[in-house]
Image 1 (cartoon, protein in one colour):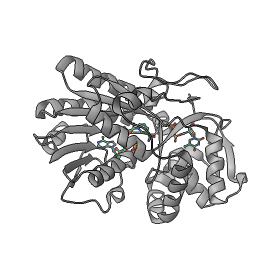
Image 2: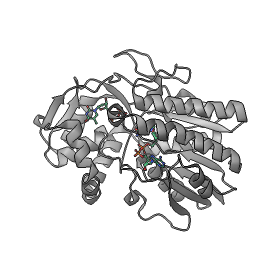
Image 3: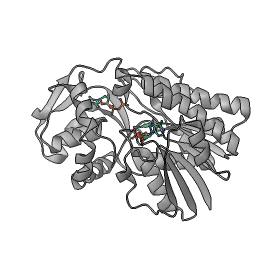
Image 4: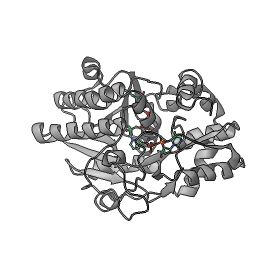
Length: 337
Ligand code: NAD
Ligand code: TYD
C-alpha cells in the first residue's frame, strides 16, 4: 500500500487527481489536506472510498497542523493547494504570497522532517510570462521565468523555494507546469465554467479586451495523468511542461460554448481588459512526451462537450458554488455587466 499526501484536494484539479488515483490503483491510500477556502468544496469528493481517502481540514501554512497530519511513511506529497485565480491576485495578493510561497516552504520542511520520498509541485505555465501574438514561440523548460501577475509571481517563487530545497537539502522533487485546465468541478470564476454557467442562465458573458488572448487548453484528466507520470518517471530537480498543443482564442472558446448550448452570440459583452493581461500561452510538451511517456487522450471537441454536459447535469453543484461569497465576488469584478 502506498500513502500519498495531497494538498488542495478539495479543489478542481486536486479532486480530479484523487478520483483517478483511487480508481486506477487499489493499493493507494490518500490523505487529502485542504483548508476549504472559497474554492475548496467537499461536494467534489462525494462518493470516494472512505477507507482509502481521509480528508483533513488544515492550512498548509500551519506548520504544527501539517506535521500532525503527515505520517512517517508517506511516498509523496502532491502540492495542489494554492490561491489560483489571476483576477483575485490583482485585487489582493496577500493570500497568494502566504499560501503559494510560505505554504510551499512549510510543506517542504515537513517533507524533510518526516522523510517523505518525493515532492511534486504543481506549477503553471504562467510562471513563464506571455508569448507574442501569432508567433511560433513556445514555452519550453528552458524558457526564463518572467511572471506578470501576482498569482504567477507567487507560483514562480514557489518553484524557487522547491529548487532551494533540492539544492540545499537534497529533497527529491519534481515540478509540473501545465497550461489552462478545463473539465468538471472547476470553480466558475475561470473562463470556461463561468461562460457555461452564465450561458445556461441566459446571463451576459464578459469577454476581456478584444477576446483575442490565446490560452493552451488541456482536459483536467490529461493533466492529472501527467502529474502521476512525473511522480513515477520524472527526474528530481526537473520541471516538465504539460500541454495538449491546443491554442484557442478566448472568443472562439466562448463561441464554441454558446454554439453547444444553442445560445445567441448577443449574450457576449466586451468588457475592460484585465490589468497586465498575458497575451498568449503556448506549451511545447516534448520533454513530458519523451521523458515521461505522456500524451493527452482527450480531444478539445470531446472534452469541451463532456464538460458542458457535466455542468448541465450538475446544476445543484453550480447553484451551491454560485451562492454566498461568489455573488459578492461577481458584483465586485463585473459590476452591472
Ligand atoms: P482551485 O482554486 O480549484 O483549488 C485550490 C484548492 O486549494 C482548494 O481546495 C482550496 O481550499 C485549497 N487551498 C487554498 N489555500 C490553502 C491553504 N492555505 N491550505 C490548504 N489548502 C488550501 O485550484 P485548481 O485549479 O484545482 O489548481 C490546483 C493547482 O494547480 C494550483 O496549484 C494551481 O496553481 C495549479 N494549476 C492550475 C491550472 C488551472 O488551469 N486551473 C493550471 C496549471 C496549474
Ligand atoms: P482564466 O480562466 O482566468 O485563466 P488564466 O487567466 O489563468 O489564463 O482566464 C482565461 C482567459 O479568459 C484569460 O485570457 C482571461 C479571459 N477571461 C475573460 O475574457 N473573461 C472572464 O470573465 C474571465 C474569468 C477570463
